[in-house]
Image (cartoon, rainbow, N blue to C red):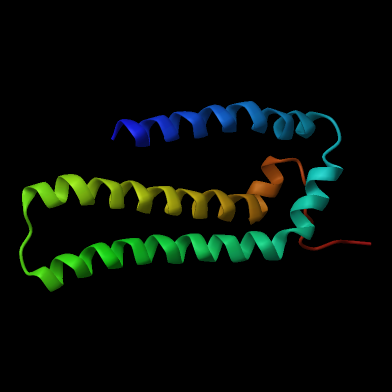
Length: 120
């Protein structure tokens, strides 16, 4: 569990260090990040789908192992269950973040103005 908390701490530090440049661009020129999101939209959608599928397969494997064995021991839940639970939430969290970045609300938050009905 200590190893997982170290990984989560390093991920949090990395996000806090590297995301400030993306949000600093929000006040200046957002043209670059908007173009990047638009051009990577198919990749973002594919990764989002794979993250959600990965989360589903993690839970499915965990549940099927207990169904097939027929019994659940407390040690099994403590050892294997916590790791699977953390893996599920990490994959699900990545899927949620990618869904927000690719959505209209996420683009609006980053400063990309999208017009649904453009009047000429």
